[in-house]
Image (cartoon, rainbow, N blue to C red; front, side, top):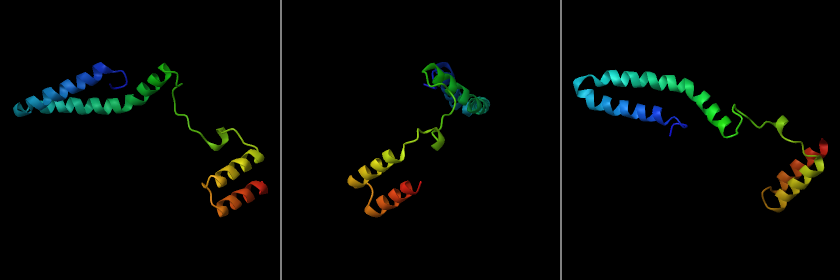
Length: 107
């Protein structure tokens, strides 16, 4: 619950319940105001909590995007074989296959 922050999650839930019950006495508004501030603070803390959780499970933390430059380059023959395989499986029609093949051969 709450990325391993059980106390924080239980505290927010308890504050919400108490605030809802005391709403009739107008005191509940104060609890909801505190809860709103808590949510805003957590919104800024959550990225750090996620990074910490990722590091603890070996994820390394931070955002990692796969980009064209980070992918290993296939040689033209491998790409052509993969294109042909997709065409044989029916994933690519003849026109798509020919267009892809022409692109690869032009490189």
